[in-house]
Image (cartoon, rainbow, N blue to C red; front, top):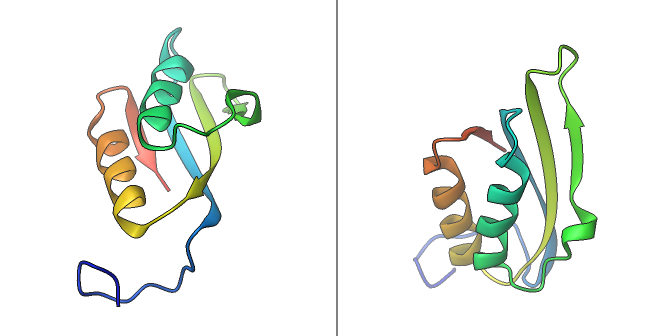
Length: 90
């Protein structure tokens, strides 16, 4: 059981990929990077993978973070999901 009283299938620390999708605007990638670094300060920005949609309207960013706890991942998902530039977090 984790400290929140629920079980998880993950064993921490682990590499955990997070996919973030949003409109393809100038500051989207930088904004995502800033949020990720707040929760995973050891994340290497050079490891960000970006892929535009087929029509170029959206951008998908994959960040593989070194997750240290379920609480860390939860906080990262909450902040990313609540940002106005972000449409989907997987």
